[in-house]
Length: 220
Ligand SMILES: *Cc1c(COP(=O)(O)O)cnc(C)c1O
Image (cartoon, rainbow, N blue to C red; front, side, top):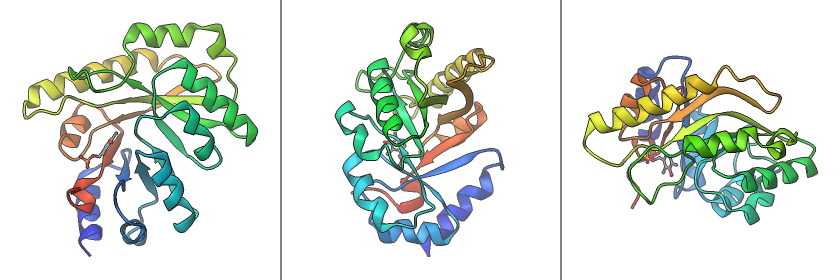
């Protein structure tokens, strides 16, 4: 029952316009089912293989979000069913997603991952790279992807002010690009906030939080 109680507690803190991605990475399907029974439908995985293993064993109305770094050669395994890809950070990857989506005659929703942390290990685009992609001819021709928002990960730190600064920057960038209204780019989703920092993220304007350990317990 713990998973259900944890979910209930988190939902009680989140207003209706904020969506919660239950990050089930490393967790067994039985945990996913427990959350599902509590009404949760959106789940996030960071590994293609793991998501592909769990998807056929789980209820088919689950919406699967790929939240981690995605390699181009693995896009084909998730293209038929993935609901949202959070970690897009290159035109090459986007072109591959577009190509695979076309094979399945669908449009795949994606988020640009923006680099906001100080940590070298984190992925993402800076504003200049973002501009270059959006303004490129190649991007304009992609018909089987749609950029629906931005995603960012703050520095892993106890310094709340630092986290707040990073999220505030991402929100400002989101607001700046939000008025753009292109065929394949219409921003409405701002994915920021994990177990340790989602309250700050929400204060800073997040409308999608990705929470794992606060729902399922800490990962070994
Ligand atoms: C693991 C992961 C999360 C969730 O992390 P928790 O701290 O367990 O909430 C969120 N986003 C990404 C990209 C992750 O890889």
